[in-house]
Image (cartoon, rainbow, N blue to C red; front, top):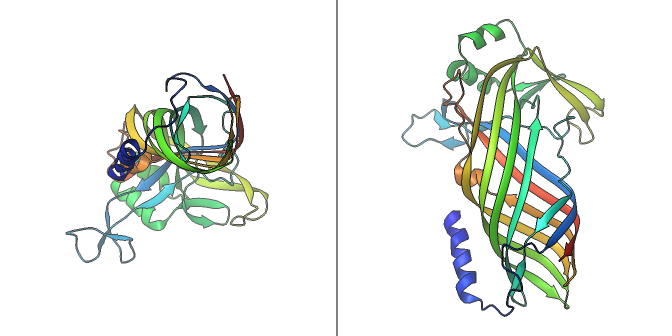
Length: 316
């Protein structure tokens, strides 16, 4: 994926002449943006490895006839549960200059700060039994055989609805540069702005793993499984079994799309702008070092996506 992004950058840089000189340097502040939208900033938990099962998704090279490569989500925030819904994006941010390269292409720098985003009692994924959520039978078996220690196995003994949940905290900073195209209509209007960029990200991740006697869901509206369902999930009989953290820098591609923008010297109006970081694809997710468990079973997958439904930028 990264090589295609870099190839796109090279094409834009060397094949499109710059017709508008920059009035400001790329690092100068161009304005302040006021925005309304949502921000997905979550940690997902996904199993990896070979298992003996006839129904797995991907065959593992050089494995036996019944061994396949398993990738199964087993802990993930549920947007229908209170405390795990998609939050509103921070309403104010700084905007860096953007330059036209010709009448239909542009380039510019961007930066943003996301976090900290803390979520507790994240929902297990796999099975729903009445009002209890838990991992699938296959994942539960793998947790017992490949991850749990003797204390964990003792805790779940005799508990028919046990499940594994997590508490996460995710902070995210990034700065980058992108190149893109749009459909110009008149002097000020730009439709379907689409760009690819590269970003330098700094992340801080903290995870607590919790065994639950059961993960109980209380219904506030509708029925579990319906589109209009809303509820509250709780890890009852909660016991923290381990914790881990990670922090560092990484480079990742970024995709930007903007449905409509009106840009003038004094202001920018925008409707439906989406930014998506491909961090998880490039880094192949994270592997945290836990204190009391040797983890070769699963990875933590950071996910970051922002959607600005409407925004106004006051330009300096």
